[in-house]
Length: 165
Image 1 (cartoon, rainbow, N blue to C red):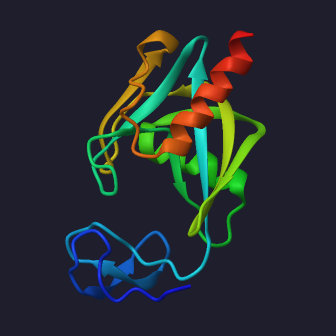
Image 2: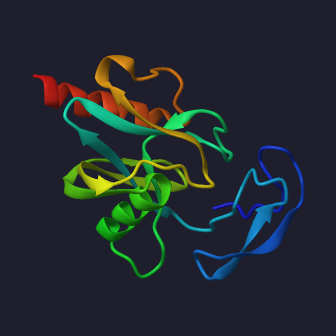
């Protein structure tokens, strides 16, 4: 895999920065566009639902600033995929969930994602510093075509089909 020295989004030189949640330094774009992860990165995404409604997050960070995505993110070294999925849901939305079994996986050239569905079991819907907005959408109100990551949108469509057929 290529080692990045410059941000692929803006061209700025990457600088070493302490990543608090990982407790290590990584090369990052000073503008916040990119963090270099030198190996395949594991992520989890969660369809947090209540009846016929799902929670989506409008991103306050790049990539995809201002676009929607499922709750989730990078796993922290030492945690299981399930632990990371539940942690990300709480960090990004303030919600507690009952995690279901994995229903889909996706892999790209730099990352892989395990998708879960999870019934909302408590908490209060709130924004994190990574969110412009966190909102519960009825199936017919989902902002299709406005997702930061195409694989999140595709996974959500697949999940809704299994729920409604």
